Length: 152
Image (cartoon, rainbow, N blue to C red; front, side):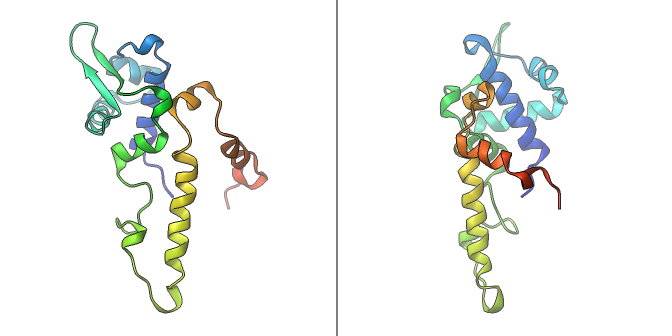
């Protein structure tokens, strides 16, 4: 699985919004500085997040962006889906839309299992848990595995 720069930047920007005191709006420039992101790219990402219902924009002098829902209700999967679409695709198709025959028939089950594994992490980590550092226990366990930090 590959996490795009767009998805990485979106999650980081939303983490900044989740950390904003009292849910005050944050300007795109300030979000970019807080996470060292390119402003022009971030503004396009914020547009995708707004259309995806993750953030709202506030006009005016003290305007900017804020989360559309409480940080505890927005998962990393919600953020990534808003900017990149489905979490796991094969050749831009959802695994359930594929068919394999012959010696590759079991491959479909592998792709579906991969999708479930990704969901088991990204659908369980909220922006609130990310910002607080209190990730779900199974995410800590996966990250603590000896092989987790190795690049084969």
